Image (cartoon, rainbow over all chains, first blue to last red; front, side, top):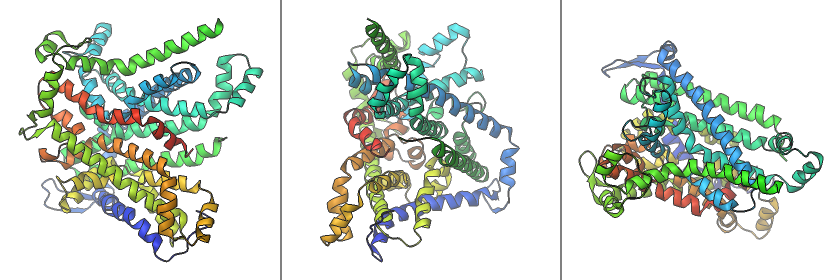
Length: 292
Length: 273
């Protein structure tokens, strides 16, 4: 909010109207519908529906495959965040140090960021196919790789497919974060502390905290929602439902299984998860980090 | 000497990073220049073959899909219309909404603020089924409007523009007011030129975001006439080298945009921080 503002009775609504209109029709209407679905039970033939209270929620909580999806989504988010964050940071630190070729490295490492997750999934498909797949052959020679029967192997498949392009995003933001650190701070710290590694963990890394937490949120959101295209083009949730994310399961139950009630309840559960993450971000993280 | 060693290590680690990011795409590209027969007998290839022109032109112009009603060229056209529509609509509505929020005294401002920003918690993936039902009620299935509008219903750009406006000094508005500038003129003559970098960055971001949509076009297009590139990838049939060629072509538009406009894009993001 500005201290100096325009005084007008109606112009502000002219500026707000287009966005509010689009949001009301294409966002709030479906959301209200989601809540309605979540609290009604439809009979299998679509003839009628009735108010069901929390039955749909009780149903998903008693469904073991919901917990499988929940467990997988948590593991997936955690591993993707860890892998892409650490590789992205490692590369960004190196790229920030080199004298020559900095912008060439930057350009070449940035561009996988632009590739759609579904395209990455289709590519991963080829590398893990029994017929052509280089990675399939490599892992198969190492320990007998078989992703459609072995859960661990399926995890490896979707984690590699899911992490690859996200390394770019982490790299871009870490590099920008590193470049924003003032030269004088680094120069002063060189005088105080000779060890490169210790200097990094005690001076540079704490200064990168805002970027790190921003990226944790970005990576979790990515693993929750954007990986739909990857799952749908790689394992399709196999073996069984072991690699279904929560979003993927809600889509399958709603669109393929036509169980609107369960899909609605699952969507609301995910909204709650996103809400908790967001509150955590604002309350806890924003309070603890010092922006320079 | 010590400096030389450490710089060699830096370059070495970066080169491994480059290999991880580039080799997979190179292998798919190299394989896409061989004939399907060759791939089927010899597997993925690391060196270029000589079927490049043949494979790529066949994929671009051949009718494909379940009913052979669409060419890859038409899918590119559809993707462009969709991505441009999403980017344009988001930029315009968000630019305006952020202006309304920052520069005016609005009644029920808190409610409107929350109405807009709580939508950040509900990505399209969470409301996919009911969105489809709403679109079919509005008769928007198999239309560009149906592909564009629900994805433009996002407040992420509004958030960026709002942050940016807040960083503009109050003196600008005071000076403009002294000159008797009205709110529409101030918006068009002062704010839009000032936000050029931000607008470009948001446009690029939304364009790539729109182009890369997968789930929504999958659901919204029962007619092959509206298939987009990214969703067509999975459903498109053809020989293995055709599919490799299509994968490579599908990533060209967003990758070119990001490479050429990366400076603008990064600048736009970090103006806010």
